[in-house]
Length: 467
Image 1: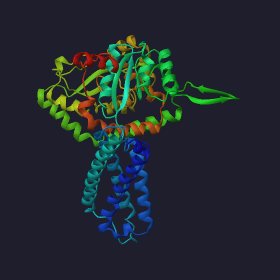
Image 2: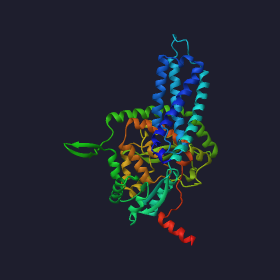
Image 3: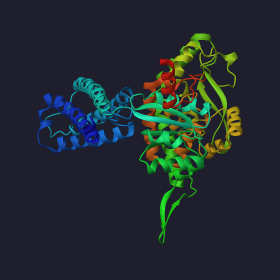
Image 4: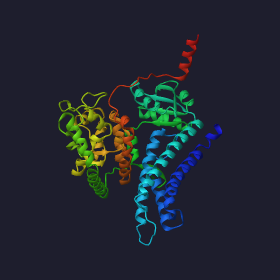
């Protein structure tokens, strides 16, 4: 196994190539049964195959790709399924368009939709099989990394440890210690990976430099100095290497194209999703006869207050301005379903069309929360530098109970790295939320408590118990 570890990246690359080749082969072989010309040398076949490859690679890049060894199998399967769906559909549409030429004896027929469905089902089977197989191979070769968690308090410990424990095949926590521990460097030396969370920047820098010098993997949480670095670039003034972080906002061109995307996207969304709007409205009305839409004051660009629209998911008399908790009895039966699949957020397409929100941007918080979070974390107001959005990093990766600081970091990551391409990627990535609906809508509640410990102390305690 130790020898195989050296070839892990090569094995992963071969598995990626095998999966993509099989997806490609399934598509063209099955369509080639009724359309033999597709498997012969021709301009149509060449262009179509090129389209499939380019679209496939681009869509996999957007949704996360074949990330075995990094993510769990289910998220990989959902991401690859979405990427393959878009690739198949667009390639199929191109085939239909290219074969409407009267000089071409072969044309695609409506019955080919059945073939498209069969193709996709077979591709899904292949994705599931190779994803589970790939992760099995990866984790058979690579045992979990021995990790230590370095924090400042039990509160910080309980914030980060549950997240690490979700990846037990990747990480094995052997030590949880305070950053002031006298055995700090000895503990780091016997670990493969170090998690540093909520440690003061000066101490964190010392730990990072030590890990770098001793070839240790390291994970640490963002502080404001790290956010500033996100927008930076390397610069050389004469012979002096520097890091440049320049203040920047959206250019006129970026604002124009972002608004164009908002108008086009919201109009298309309102038209396509109109049946879902009607069904949701009827269900809400039939349950308790109350109002269908719920309006609430939210903050957007430069702190401007506007009324956000949502489908009502709570009992009208209890719809007060406070965050949702675990097993909240204010939520209606219909509301619970709407919240689970984020359907309650769809009326915000109206806010986007009106120009009060954008498709992508920081989540508009309740005015009461903005004041509260800003008192706790003064930097929270920085997220008001752009228009509030329906989706974004915080909405895709976060949950209802994601901490204010983590929400802030996710939003500032978007603001500082903004591009139109990033907007497009995040719009498509929003679809992955539906595959983790119950997880992403997790409410505020209490979790498991963790205690500081070291591997050596645990061994001594076990010896005492044996005696």
